[in-house]
Structure formats: C-alpha cells, structure tokens
Length: 417
Image 1 (cartoon, rainbow, N blue to C red):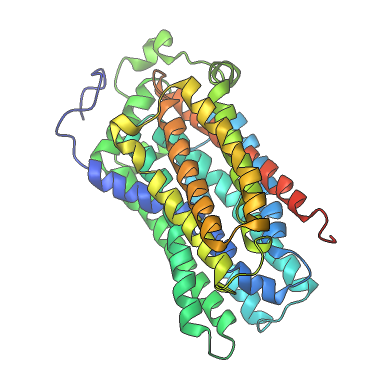
Image 2 (cartoon, one colour):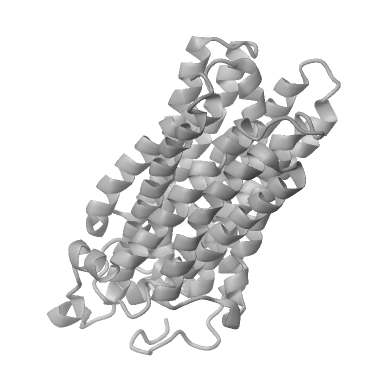
C-alpha cells in the first residue's frame, strides 16, 4: 500500500479509469429506477387520468428521500457506508421488481388501489435514493474530483438513457395492442436488471480497485470510521500503525461548523434544484399546451432536458470553463430564476421550438452548476469532513427538489384544480 502521508496518490496507482466507469454506472443506478417511473409518466397519465401522477409521484418520493437523508446525514460519522450503499441499491432492485409485480397482478388496470401501490413504491425509491446518493457523494468527496464528476454524470445519464429507451419503446409499441403497457413493463425489467448489476459492482468490484483502497485508507488514517467495512471488503483489515496515537490528526470539524463555513454552497444546491424541479417534470408534462408533435411533445422535452443535463456535467472537465468562484456561482444560480417568466410566456405565446430551446438550457445549466459546486466545496478538508460535507450538500439538494416539486403545483392555479 502506498504511503498515506504523501500529499497525493502515487503516480502509477492503478484503477483510475476503471473507478470512473464504475462511478458512472453506480450514479446511473442511483436514479435509473426513479427516472424510469418519471419517463413512463404518459403511461401513468393514461392509467390514472384524474390523479396528476407525474406531480403526485414526485411529491410522494421527496419527503421519504429528504427525511431519510436528514437522519443519515446527522449520524453520518457513525454509519457503515458499505452497508448503507448496499442497502440502497438492494432496495432500488426490490422496488423495481415490485412495480412489475403490481402491474402484472392488476393486469395493467388503473384505480385508486393501484395508484396507492405505485405511490408506495415511489416512497421506497426515495428511501433508497437517500441511502445511495448521500452515501456515494460523501464517499467520493474525499477522492479525486473526477470520481464525483463521473458519479454525477451517471445520475444525469440515467435520465438521458431512460428518455432514449422511452422514445424507442413508444415507437416500437405505439400501434400494437396494449403498447403503453408493454413499453412500461420492458422499462422495469431493464431497470431491475440494472439495479442488480449495481449491487454486484458496489459489493465486489468497487472496493477492490487500488485507487479506491488508497483513498479509503487515507480517510481512515485521518479518523474516518465509515470506511472500515469497505476497506475490509478490499482486503485491508487494519489502519497504519501510529495513526491511532495522534489525537490531533483525528480531530475534525462538526457538521454545524462545516455547514456554517459552506452555507453558500448549501444554498447553491438548494436554489439550483428548487428552480429545476418547479419546472421539470410536472410543468413540462402537463402545462405546455398542444403542438404538432402531439403525444411525443412531453417526451421530447423531457429527453432534451436529460441530454443537456448530461452534457452540462462534462463541461467542468475543461478547466478554463469550470466556474469555481463562490460569488460567481451564486450570481449564475440566482440568474437562472429568470427562466420562470421565460417558461410561462413561452408556454402561453411561443411555439415548440422555443420551448425545446429553453428546456435544453434548463438542463445544461442544472448539470454544469451541480458539478461545479460538488467538486469545489470539499477542497481543503480532511477525509471525514469531506464525507460529512458531501452528505450535507446532498441534503440541501434534496431539500431544493422537495421545495421545487411543491412549488410546481402553483402552475395549476387557474386550471380548475
């Protein structure tokens, strides 16, 4: 094992690119099931025409995600990260299977009972997301910035992939009997299989990569207790000698001090997602009027958002395009709120080309600013502090999402609901 007192990892430490690929896949798995449920919103709109399913499912998901993550973030220093992340991916897998079981058991019929069942699965996805997203972002915050960028790009890629799959299944089954239902079933078969793959990747591949073992050992030497099970899975049983005897080396800032020092970053995350989720997906699914694309219109808008969100998450890899100024980030994030009147007037007076352009810009800025904040905030802290800060930022992100999906209902004022 490399000397942990070095400032950086050894130049020839293996597994960097493999780790980036695995991080991307694990990020994908973190939201693949949920994005599948969002992307087949047209199927649920057909099954439950009176229940505003795209808005209700998001509103059910968020309190479970936010409440669970608040508990996990508060107790972050004592939680076994390996158990936390594995539990999250296993719950994603089970909940994806339950969507299939529910649809097959009811033979694809709607009704209040079925809708309550779908809402319960949505809540399970929220609990799983809190375990995985906070756990993974915290874990990757004390590693290379490329790893957290890959994980965040994977989150966005899950949206782009599910949108592409939905467009393909809609085209394939559009003219067949029960085409809606066949496409939805295919979605959740793929989703369940992918979540199972993520369980295997996190359990058996990720902890054994040399560069991951290096960073986890380094975090353990700085006092982190959350990585011990992952180190054991990678074949490392004990900390380097002498580290336990140096109490100063094991001192760390508490969550309150970390939050006060990084309150602007926390507000950044909240404001990015309160704006995005007040528009996406509810407004795009229901309030954009009728256009020549017909039933394809909402799907195209959601696909464009997801693709540009993914592209935006790769832009900060180009160093001179990455925004790292704390003041600059706040100005950019506040200026995005001009998109609210832009969407309102475009929906009322503009054509579909302008709406597609605005939706693409919403996605691009969402992805770009998310990566800029998550990769800038942890710099200069010890491993355990970076882990805690990562969890706190995800908590504010989910708080922004919850506020956004609640505010999203304001678009329905004057529409008779």
